[in-house]
Length: 544
Ligand code: SIN
Image (cartoon, rainbow, N blue to C red; front, side, top):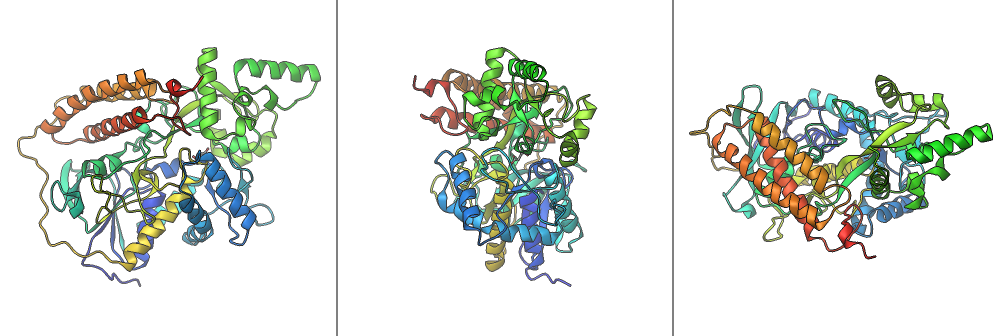
């Protein structure tokens, strides 16, 4: 039986995706007791929705494989990746994959027992481990089952972190001593002590009307850390996934880039019609790729990196006035597609669409925040004012900006980065156990607060926020539109601030407050940029 070696100190992780749970399990295996705060069920994370997979070269001696994974990552990152980070993460991949296998993650294998490797945009070869088209779900299953049964881990579902508690109010250099959380079962605010606090809170795709992210992705960790004095970086780099299913639905749905890796091609209405006519005239099915408008933007066509493909679709939709483009798979083996992509296949059926048969309506949707809290090589954020390490705080996974992705993340590199940094943060804490705080923590300011009598204004403000971000801070930007967004966000911020100061917190107010702050930071970063690179594209900066 494992013994707790550090009963005296408290380690708190906020977030239960791959980064949070992997870190918790590693710490718990080393004898540390860990609390994991998560705002819904532990499985309600972006990880759980990840389809594609985790890019990794499994053979540490495969120099050519490692080099080409590094080169593809650097190329996708538009010259802005931190080369030493890329090198070290990619070289660490095989060890972390072994850890995931040891925890019980089941990656797809071929008939001969070798891992089946998929390919996605920007990858020059097949190197993506996956579990059919529901890789994140399989990873989350294994991690959450392990965490649930671990005696050193206390999962705290339905707890929404509201704000970090500083050791000395207004002095980030003194570090963090805890977090206030809204217990959504009792609707009370709890004060949770933490000697070390690890943010694994994911991204903020909910800022946009079209997103592939789950409803929990509201930038809570980023906003809390910023309010506590942490630096932020590269927030303008928002990755839009090119192929979200464009049908009316209560829930966004991604069509993995691995579908293009297996030969799926993006066409517009005209290209589709020309290709279909040509197939009829030839009396056989020919490749649709030459009919793809994406070739105007890159010779890699539908398999170019995400920034290029998403922008190409956005541009083409504006030119044609159409609300979507198509992902065509009818030239591919239907049975093979259905066996590789069962989740997508059954989802499409619900919308009356058949994989390997019907052209699939797709459009870009906000998918991943490349920027975040800049961290050092073990996941420690920095104090904004001084640039010093932020004591007692870690940030891992999508909330962090490690330098791995530069200006544009290569597909399937994020689960890898998350697991590598989760392990590094855990190892550091294991070798340097946190010292226990002695100070009393302040309780949440509750006096004079009323229950919010109506939630309608919060709903309206959230809709307005998402529309503003979608229209003015989307894939293609302009200074005039960014300024318009900045002005609107100030007004929204004032409205929500008033509600915030007067009301007992609810999940919707807490999230909206965070989203507005993050929206302002994204817009500010976009306005400050004088050059286009990777995922930031401002039409006014294009030199004719
Ligand atoms: C996908 O399956 O296309 C998404 C993978 C990723 O975002 O890395």
